[in-house]
Length: 475
View 1 (cartoon, rainbow, N blue to C red):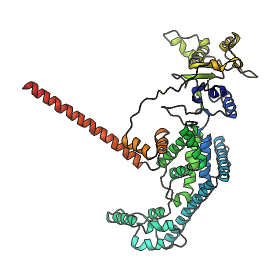
View 2: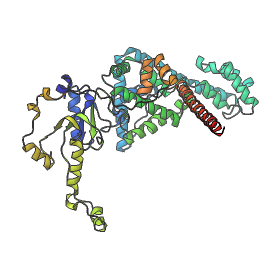
View 3: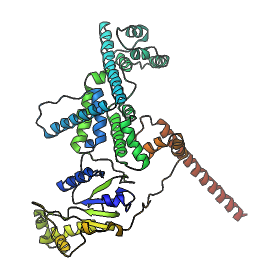
View 4: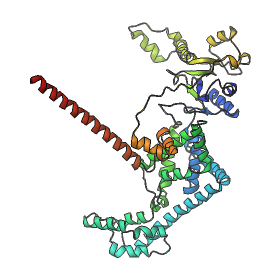
């Protein structure tokens, strides 16, 4: 593989595909480790959990440094203990990054301080309300309550600011005039909330050098894998905002609700489901990485170089249901004792027919390793061994751009690219979810509206032309 890349027989590592009967077996994991130890990056979205990729471990580790993490309890559940082991890994990784990057360390300290201040502000404002005998569900009365809350001892400037904001005050008075006043709980939550959410925090984090280098690699076309995984993180965080809350208040954090919903509900569910890495249906193989696929996944695809490292499929006897149903079938099927063999032939036919220029079949040996009988016959016929192969005889490949053309709009494509090519790359190419999506949404909406108007005018023009032609005919 290294020779093929170094001699430019492939234009990108993603033109070399490794196909396995299953990505969950030890053979796939061992091959992945071997390639990575040799400095060759691998893209295997079905081989492991998304949360275990380096980018997810680093990002969520920094989240732990800012918000804290749930305590480990004495539950014997394997998933529970495995999840907390993952949290340990995240925490250790974040600790290492903070030691390496002082600006990131300062940023995390500032955000942690903001979180602690929001929790403290909520506690003090609540105590002030209780001291004055105000129930939290009572209607907020600005004339009697605003000054008292503003004078709460030791609250932050950020907490006092909403209480004197003229725009917010106008909204409060309008609600009172409409007979829909805010509750005291709502006002205190607003005063003690953070001005960023988890998606905002994510975008601030990935601006630091450790993550910025990943965008540089993607922009150069060297390695798109890390950026693809960061894009998937943004999608998961956006889903969390839609499912739980888009505002982080001192109450929500201080009560432990954020810790429970974000870590023990949301991320724990992703962990238990074993959600896989980033997969793009339009561009499924990021540049700079060797794709690992199941043979089933490779149907309909072709690669210049195909490697089948494990030519093995166990023969299983026909199931009980197959034996019971077979006498009732009105057509003749494959002999029951040969079904497993036919399944193997079909599977390996798919694998062996994916290669365009070179097919490499593994011949692993050792205790407990078996090879499908047909391959043993192939090996005995004297096929070319890897050490005998002259790489110069393999035709060089070019990147065949077979992408389906997509429609572009002036507002959401051209203007966004003109404003910042890197933002365009992030949001339009790699599927990052903007934390402030109104501008992009508005651009797309304008484009679609103009398209609709355009088609309407064409239809009206055609109708008018048809009426005119009919009138001329009648005349």
